[in-house]
Image (cartoon, rainbow, N blue to C red):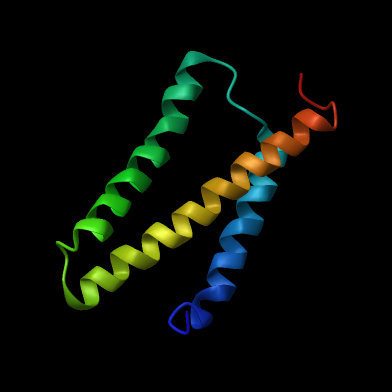
Length: 92
């Protein structure tokens, strides 16, 4: 837990940015935008897979773990922001 404490400003910034982007854009509406939205999710899955397998050792592995945390916070923020847009009735 103490290893995550220095990362909280970056994680909070990623979450805030995701909330803002999600609230401004909402959920994808066309097939092309759904495909484009799936790309960061696949990147997150690859990063989590690398982290869980422990295939990247040392400092580079720490970078992979941090990237997975930041991308996960950003995507969670995007989802919650888009959900807030739908619940507020601003979805076209």
